[in-house]
Image (cartoon, one colour):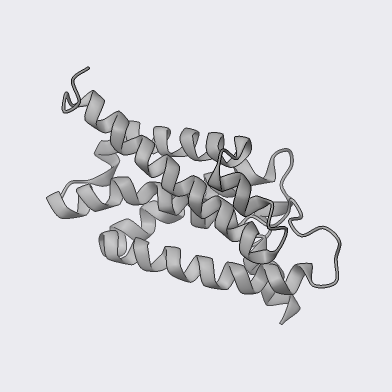
Length: 166
């Protein structure tokens, strides 16, 4: 079970890439998220977020049990789950409108950059979740960062399309 937990937690070893394993985890999440969207649209990507969160929580608990470091850098399943949350802001409108999600490429860049920004700087509730210093906090801080990034993508899209006039 420990081998499986480590494979999940490190997303097949991605977490061992250096430098910046969290960024590598977020980058790996992009093509995986695209593939999930292409295969099943928004519902599949949303389901994958739930599965990644649940299995990531289990894997994090398993791999950090008995360790003083509650969030070792090689654990990147949290980045994958959080990055997918950020991508939901693109997946839903593309799926609902029948658009090729790659047409929303500026949103992909924004989702990645905003997610990394919120994950690294840990504003407000992101920092609160991180300070929990337990497996739930490991997963939750990235999901909250993903929600912030998704909201940022929505605001940027509204600005870009003239919906929000300042």
